[in-house]
Length: 612
Ligand code: F6R
Image (cartoon, rainbow, N blue to C red):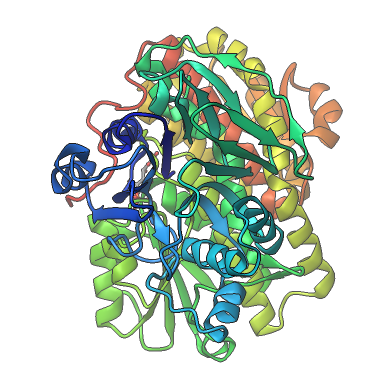
């Protein structure tokens, strides 16, 4: 996620902004920028690609900028490649406004076209620049900073935390929040904004968390917050007593836990801008319906957890498209002499976009003439650059080695892709299409209810962290989900674990089940629930200790056989893995915590695997 810092006071703003941004570096970013209003009433803007140090050196630690009010930003690219033009702050053409933004403006294309028709010239590829240009456009009509911001907010849709400077108003800064975190810091004769409290800890511990739709006007003397109807309101102040290292993880003990809890927000970012009037719209996809219809073969290729997403994607795509979809491990695909021609689509899935096996498989696919579409989190990464089409997952930076929010967003993107392809091929009926769209919209909220039960999983993990070996069993979608649960557990807790398609147990593996073996039975998939139950009975009969995962509507049924049942909210079968993965991530996390493992950096593993 991008980082936001803003300052207004008596001191020079630039060094404070740079220091605040440096405290947000852990969140990951690819470029940075600051802007201050000078005593002459102009906005001085400096930006650079790469590390904050590059920006800091460029402006001599801030000494080059003269001004006591300013905003700063570290950017994690979403719209447009990471470079200094696309980095924030963005300025309006006439130089009146500078803005920093976390989030996504969903209707930016339409606004950009409108402004271009009015003669406005854009510099960047970003959605954020439309805010800066729109501010100046409205300001030229009303000449009132507060009123201008209100008009802009009524015009844009999406998620945003904003810090706004107006060159004509050097005594004020405006901050706005909708669906993206922003907080206000109160000092003596100086005040602050930040996306994360970490940035402010050396300066103030007196903060107010903004709520959705609120706007704040900051002056040197104080901060006034306004409700969504722009009426002044009083907000509760919070005192922060964290130490800096805890705060860097947003108060969570590990990045992995933080990222698990960030999943609903990450899903909102991945899904909501792509659902328009009940249809999936990939504004970022070049593939046409005609091209989709012309493909005779579809592959999905990836590694590790991304491969598990591919397995789920295969089930969904095949069901919706009635086409054969082959899913392969990138490290195998490269050497398998794949049957590929120019009527083949290969979908690559990668969080980092730098995984060497995946990148090499991509080169092989291209060499053989395939059309390459990738689903990637890191903007501008090698896999993204090497693809004909890229769908970004917009999960924000993932720091823990074990992937969580990238997995969830990859899954959401592939589900939406199935709808888009199904529409192009005419293989998905309208009722199903509408039902999937409606359930996709509810997914973040349903995931929040799963997360709210984290203590149940923590208790279960506390009873079972001493096993030497743990099995995950399930069928079809639940089997692919089990593979992910098992991988999470082994990579961070170092417990040996296997995932089996339940039907395979009787072909050999069931001999491993003995008194006290822990089996995590996944029985979420409604079509195969009865069969999943019979496998549970089989392992129980051999003495296994079973934890079952099912849906709310089947909890009672499951409880008749298994005493320990975790239930996720009901949704369409194809979306159940998106909810079911959360308890499995949490189980792996809490088991590893009990065992004292280095959760964020498990032994022998790297976040981005750039070796073969
Ligand atoms: C597991 C995990 C790995 C990655 C794999 C592929 O938690 O993170 O299995 O999924 O190394 O990485 P990307 O998706 O970056 O290509």
